[in-house]
Image (cartoon, rainbow, N blue to C red; front, side, top):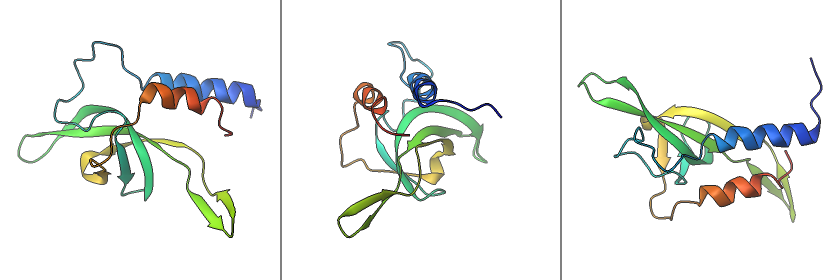
Length: 123
């Protein structure tokens, strides 16, 4: 297995995250989906995250299209005393709309700013 240096890894993460940020015309985004940048909780992974994309997937029993979200899950932090430890790293996943809880009482995150912040975070 090839060893990847830190700069290469950061660049690959930036490229992957850039693909989540849409161009100006993005007609395939479902109109009833959560906005990009909405804070969510993944029920499957039990972690907080951010909606990066949404698209139609399968069709349910009633013939309604099911929305699939692309989520960037954030690292879980554990506090012991005054010290914070990261348990996990960032995680990119696709999940059905039924497996996502959206926090609609908070404004969506600016995805462009989040993208620029990711370049400076340790992986």
